[in-house]
Amino acid sequence: MEKTKRLRTSRFHNSDDVKRRKIKVKTVETDEFDDRICLNLSRESITHFEDLSNEIIYEISEYLDYLHVYQSFFDLNIRFRKLFTNSNFPIKINISSISKSFFRRYYTHIIIPSQYRIISLSIANFLSFDLDISPHRILSTFTRLEILILVKINSKYLENVLEDIASLPNLSSLTIIPIDYVKNANNLLLQIFRLSVLKYCKISFKNKPTNFDPLPFATKEYNSPIEQLVIKHQIDVNNLDRLLSYVPQLRRLSLDRLNGYYKNRLNHPIALNYLTHLFLKLIHFTFNDFEILIKNLFYTIQVLHLYIEDGEEYLNAERWKQLILSHISNLRIFDIQCIYSFVINKSAQLRFDFLFDQFTLPFWFERQWFFARQDYFKYGYHNSTFYSTNPYRRKDYKLTKKLNQYTRLENQETNLSSVRHVHILDDEAIINCMNHFPNVTDLTLKNISARRSDSFIINLKHIISLKNLTKLVIEDDDYSFERLIELLSSTPNIHTLKIQSIILNQKDLLTMQNSENFQLVMNENTIRSLTIKQICEIEKIKLLFMLCSRLQHFTIEEPWTRVDELVRLLLSKNNNNTRHLFSLSISNENKRLPNKLDTIIQAGKLLDDYFIEFDYPKIYLWW
Image (cartoon, rainbow, N blue to C red; front, side, top):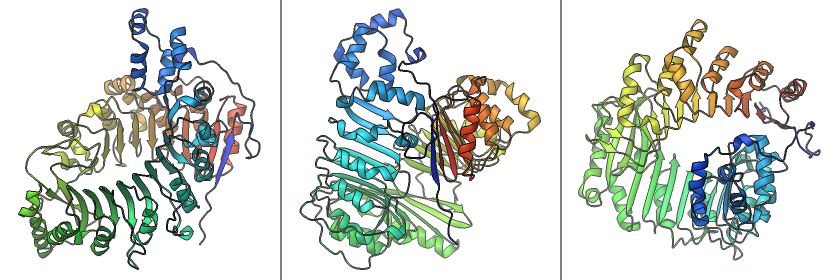
């Protein structure tokens, strides 16, 4: 059965482009910034700040987004205005969370006059790429540009982008993460490998299997200076040597999805004489094929980060020892994370215990390479994660309900300073947890029992600093709204929240609103982005916006049919709780809805400057 084709249509309000079938609506524009965005400093603080030299002010500015610099200082006095407009001071532009109306002013007042000063440009707002005023359309004018980051860009723009940046003399870092499938990946790669001063490249060119076509081997015209290459999309191992033939200066390589099995030996010998750091993520990839990679391509590495799923055969300590001694003798850091599962029985458990014990022999101890194993149940199987410790080097850590009788973890508290994201997959996992995560900013919760609601937060505080958290994801369908409020009262710096639903009786809505915890969170939280999987009642949406009145982005993941009612609520000029909102995403498969939505907005004069896009099955509204 043929799948439904992915539909993508757009509606512009405030656009001169008539070739793309956009709805044009008369707009109200202004060349002036809203006075409210200027920093309201007291005379004493201004006087104190004015005593600083220009050099120190420039140095301070390097730590701030240039948009905030402009907002804060441009209207203070003539000196500061000239300081930031009539200078060669390099600036960095970041376009991510910004309203459409302010984006237009940003482009007019900052980007256009400062093209020759921009050294870094990052665009992560995918809706902005379709605008005529998007900076990606004038990249060739940014003659000082050193760093370019394009995230969620439509692949149809990439050939022109790469053509425009080919002449930039200082572009040393490039990141491209398209939002859709890439049809012409090889052409794009060849354009990238022609960039004459590029040192760092990170790409994710998702490709359908039917569009697969291997790269040709590099010829003499290609001699890319890339030293660090990060590839997030799938790479077939049989084409790896072709890809690497373009980057002879490579020092660091990261492959996030290497798969396949060798049908033939390597076609051409590739010399990567400078390669020292290697990160590989392998899924269903045999140890035999991995050994071929090491022997033929990666024998110069000094640092190995390896992630393997379904990797039981990688638990062979003697085989690792021989590979290291014979082919990667310069290896200094051996960082492995291996996930495997098996049916529980005594003989299997004894076998895995024996395999694990082999990694405690003198060869590993002498190199200060230590390991641990965490065992847990998942989907009816006994699952294990074998990983490097002392130190733990990864940014993610999963806490699960361990099977104590099989666990072989070190029985001492450990500060895992590298971890930024903790996944708690069972509330029992944090009881008596000996690990501490001082630098965690992201927290994901799943299988959290309501029976331990009070003790859960107490235990949580023992392993992470709740005030450091900026992102919270709750994956439980039955996580009550009352418990959410309780958790948010201890995490005042959350700016991104994702939940499944709101579990709250209709009769308890008023009681909840008047509760002390609700009032505390309502006044103190800084949540700017909220995603909810499923919500049915408009009253609960009102409750969410009452709680999170600083919201800028709101997303409903599962189909929502009452779009007209929702839009009127959120865009009402009398709704003070939505005054900061400028982005809405709704799941709805009705391709006629964008036209209906546009009619509602115009008829009610709800917005002056907005953009509607239907990207099946989602509708986006940005204003």
